[in-house]
Image (cartoon, rainbow, N blue to C red; front, side, top):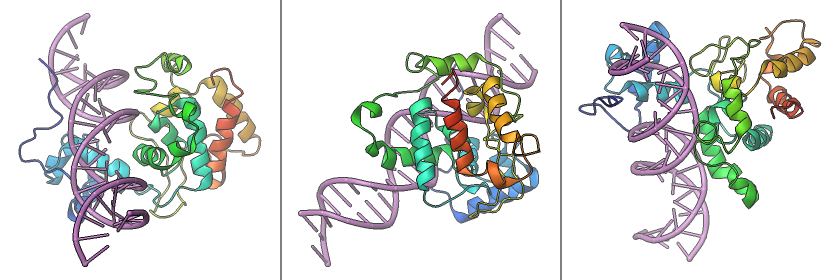
Amino acid sequence: MGRAPCCEKMGLKKGTWTPEEDQILMDHINTHGHKNWRALPKLAGLLRCGKSCRLRWMNYLRPEIKRGNFTKEEEELIIQLHETLGNRWSAIAATLPGRTDNEIKNVWHTHLKKRLPQDTKTKHKKRSAKQNSSLNPQITEEKEKPLLSPPHCVSSDVSTLTTTATSDTNDAIHVPINRGAAESLDDDFWSQVLSSYNSDETTSFPPNSSSVYHNVDFWYDVYMGAQDLPYF
DNA sequence: AATAACGTCAACCGCCATGTT
DNA sequence: TAACATGGCGGTTGACGTTAT
């Protein structure tokens, strides 16, 4: 038995992606989508494993990816969320439109970690929520809960509901909820959050306007609000 | 100018969760 | 229900650029 390797190692390229490979991958996904990552490289004519293609797309090629330095607000938010969520980078990334878990992880290790006092640095360790229930039992409990309903999550990817997005801009409208984020938040939480925001926005979640939801401040408020709730 | 030390970040690896047969 | 396939996540690594000596 045993698990099959993610890809047969023979003949597949590794390492940095070339612009040509990027182009091929983008073209293929733009025309065919990415229903099956494993089959994708073969269909696209890439000598990469599906996992590598997925990673490249998710972390670099997606049009909604926001590049460039993190703002002070973003950094603060990451620090605060890390305090609550631990190393659940995908959940943290879900609150930062256009930022990837990988990028956040890198920023954390290269910049933000240094700012923290020693005791907080050692607070979260190893496979935060998944394996170490002792670390943050609340999070583990949350995993048992059904997915929240309000921001109707799409199951795959970091599901940003996005209007036409262009890279290097902040114009995309993101409702960056994925499974990771979803599982850490429950219905009561969302109903509170949404009721407070729906009082201002006549639209239901997700809103048509980008004015609030793609703003870091919004997610910061969400986070701060969440601290008042029992699960946090 | 050379090179060692350090910092950053893209990418890989292995594990786990979930879906499918 | 078991076995397998696939996607997703977090930890880690290695290449590359920058700074210090």
